[in-house]
Image: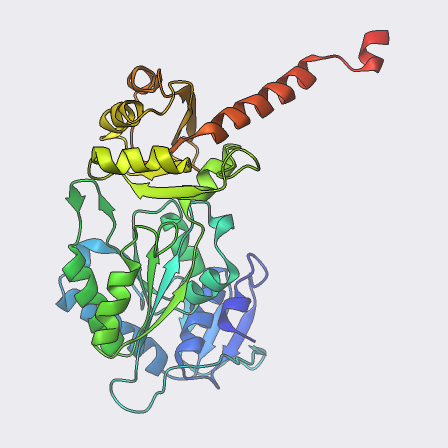
Amino acid sequence: MKASALSVAHRWQGRVVDLSDHRGPASWRAAQALALEGATVYIGDSRARDRAHGFDRLAREHGLENLALQWAAELRGEISSDACAPHAEKIALHEAEEPSENGENPAGVVTLVGGGPGDPSLLTVAALTAIARADVVLLDRLGIALNVVDFAPAALVIDVGKAPGRHKMSQHSINETMLAFARAGARVVRLKGGDPFIFGRGGEEWRFLAEQGIRVDVVPGLTSALSVPAHAGVSATYREVTRAVTIMSGHQPFNQAELSSLVSLGSTIVILMGVATFPSTVAGLRKAGLPDSTGVALLEQGYTANERHTFTTLGAAIDEARARGVTNPAVIVIGDVVNVREASAEIIESRTDTPTEGEELA
């Protein structure tokens, strides 16, 4: 049984569990998960917890106290290394690729995990497994951030999220932090929004760690560039409308040559981090000949309780965005696929408003 499989809400309430035969990292993760749900857990000795304490000490040595959302060794339930109660239930743990307990610094590994657009239910099985097996989680500014303590009850969780103009930790420091924990033998999860390789600097982090001799695994995630429009009913491609999608970062203004090339290509344009440069983008696309009737979707805070959609046209987009007070985070979609969405919405509304045959008779 994997440690991650032991966490089933309320199943372990009031039970007494014997993990005293297990001494590896899996035993500590299992003990924390079970204790968090109300079980009384006995572990064989203190080595597994000492290992977790070691990661906490390393975090403090690196000055990360203010960024730690959860400490690895902090008890979240009743765990004891005393003599085990005779009526305790024994549980067999079988988890592949446990770090070696031989030597002071067993080889660590970093897994770059895509957290998707923010809804925890959109995490992949591979992502959940990596998080559950992590010793240390470095997370970005995510919609799923508050759920990480549930998914990884035995991990040191550090918030290194970046907001526009406000960085809790520089990219250089993030890289060095991952390296330090991996060299200490930790399973490190770098949890990033969307997909790690879509404007997530995942490739840069992978290269840095590889150059330092650290093994890196990658778990892709759903990018907000495609999932947020889909959630709003906007299909990035549509037969006989467009067969191409261009995903761009709007962090810096586009030059006129770039915008003219986009218009010539005829693809759906998806822009992330593009609210601040949106007026210049619209002006440049219009100058390049994109018709004012072209559809525009401004999709704010996708997959959150504050999600908001603004559907408009290129000619009216700037005024509409200002009137609505559109802010980041937002996914901007420009193309005729937005008009297809609007046509589909009108069909649905007309069918909803039209009484059925039974209603007419009544």
